[in-house]
Length: 172
Image 1 (cartoon, helix red, strand yellow):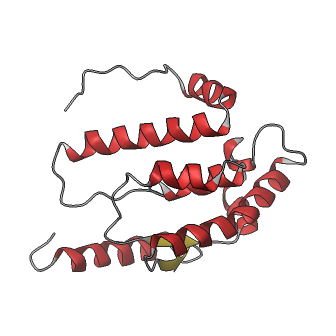
Image 2 (cartoon, one colour):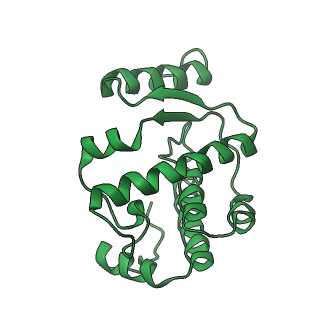
């Protein structure tokens, strides 16, 4: 279903430029606004399951890593409903880099960070691990950790089986 609203940016480059010009608090609120809007549009179709990549957690962790006041970030996230379950794909940042060998400035700690692209990515993502643990502790949920080193089809199968189990008998 179309919402009738035109996205504010024509290209990813325009969006990245806009995001790069925002201060931390404004960027956090903009990201959470966009996520809330995406959820609003997705739930209009009344799905049985919404599978979200990172939910609000990944943005909160990144923004805290950028130095945004954690209380502002977590306060802004307070309006999001708690998920029924969280799967956490765990991987060491150096291994993640070896697998992808490319990252956005945002994933590297910002365009002004020093070092090679690899050093920026690994350094920033390593610093974020503490924030991830803090977010998990604060949610009160026990995240199910899966190794991102396992073959993708095995991870996908484990997640799909877990979702079907939680939906109950007769779910497909």
